[in-house]
Length: 169
Image (cartoon, rainbow, N blue to C red; front, side, top):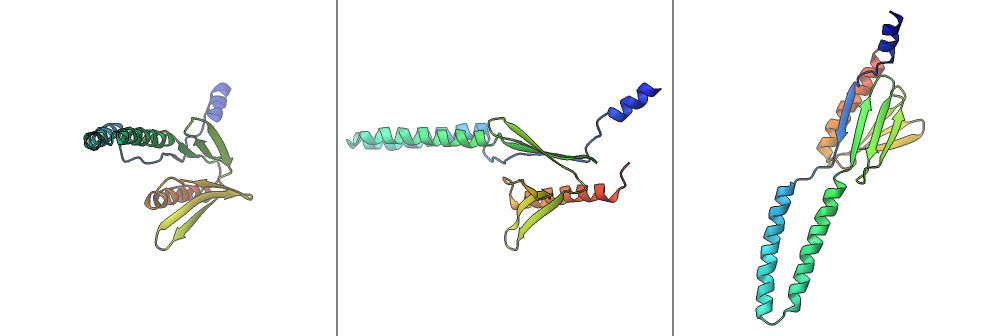
């Protein structure tokens, strides 16, 4: 009977609030392929026109433009691999930031001391969300739009309030 009680006590508590925030990318990989084919077709048509006019060096610059556009999109998609994982239990508010290169850094707060700070602009809505505790501040949801930040801040604020309102067990 004692072993069962120890196992129950050491079992991890399920999170009260948990979410993973990722940057939004409106163009899928298939859409990227279609876009690159369309840009390539336009570039080829323009290149042939300049070739026939005798300005053949322009073709090389148009090809360079195509390569630079592809590199820019690839870097953008690489940056989209970044994420923020937020998990709230009765004992800990954990924020794990995962960079585009896959490096994860975790920051923890006591949920009873953590304050949710929300910056609002009358015209643009929520411009910033951060967790503050004991002089430390951590910005959250920087890559979300104002509406998404508003929803996130409301949900996290409600979860923090519910923890503070219920007695510790």
